[in-house]
Amino acid sequence: MAAIYPTALPQVYGYLLPRCGSVTVAEDLTAETFMAALAAGRRRPAPQVSVAWLIGIARHRLVDHWRRAVREQRGLAAIEREGPASDDPWSEVLDTQDLHMALLRLSLPQRTALVLRYLDGLPVPEVAEHLERSGHATETLLVRARAALRRIYREGGHHAA
Amino acid sequence: MPRDPLEALRLPSVPVEPRPQFAAALWRRLQGAAEPAARQGATVRYFVDDLDRAVDFYCRSLGFEEELRPAPTFAMLYRGDLRLVLASPVPADHHGGGSRPMPDGTKQGPGGWNRIMLEVSDLAGTVERLRAAGLRLRNDIVTGVARTVKAHSRHHERQPRHLEP
Image (cartoon, rainbow over all chains, first blue to last red; front, side, top):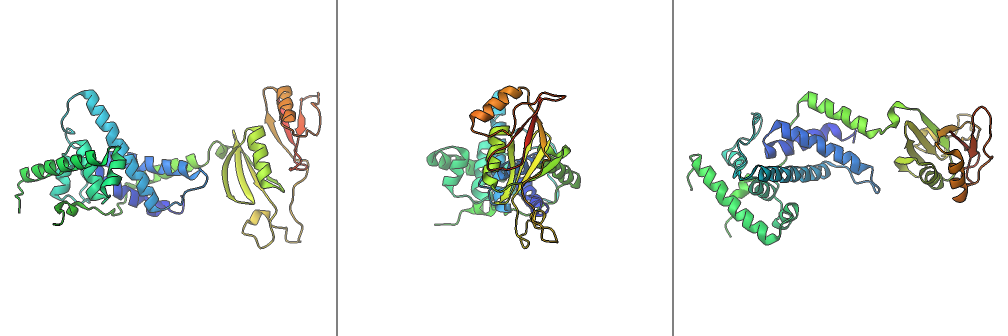
């Protein structure tokens, strides 16, 4: 871990930050990722430590984080959207393309599905696995998420080509 | 089939340097977690002939936990504040530097009368349990200023452990 930390840290953080859109959350999840990696490293047989492996852990952490947030929102009852996306700055070093911004305004299940499918480029069965949904339910979620994303994107002044 | 326009969302992971304070704090946290319990205590090193059996003995009979076992000739165990390094002798050209022979050719090996001392709350019960597990004790419980017993096992010649209440 010591050998890989200096190069892996910006990679893991760079994966998480644009996806969660919050410095605070990205830092928390980055720390969780490395602590989990350290714990996993004690298991035998020891896993092959690599940036790809760490980003796989980060992806799980991110999905878990969103799942927890969805549960909390349900507890608060009937919040359709994720309120204001985040209260800390969407750092200027990031890709702030409107499409990505629109993504942040989606409901969490839709956002999770689109991030895994499009930002991460995972095939639908893998997205379904992360979401713990059936393939069919995942397809449906993706269709709705795409429609919602387009709506928000066009509300932002963009028109269909 | 037309290309999915949302493919444009693809976001390869581009490295982003986090705040230096965060990077340093996380590194400290990882280092702390990487050295459970033993980091403020002492480290003792024993030579053993059969690493597998020695690790099994310490972990199963005396409550040690395995921390690292990166090679067939080296294991790091811990119990509370004590870290116990177990090593097998290696040839002069082996990468395990600390276990190589001395410059004059003297080989390092198990033996000697130095020992670690483990506190147990019930010495008689512990001795009984170790005997029932088939371990050979060098001595019975000795009553003196301190009550102690030396334990060793066949695979671990002349490496006694005091159990001290």
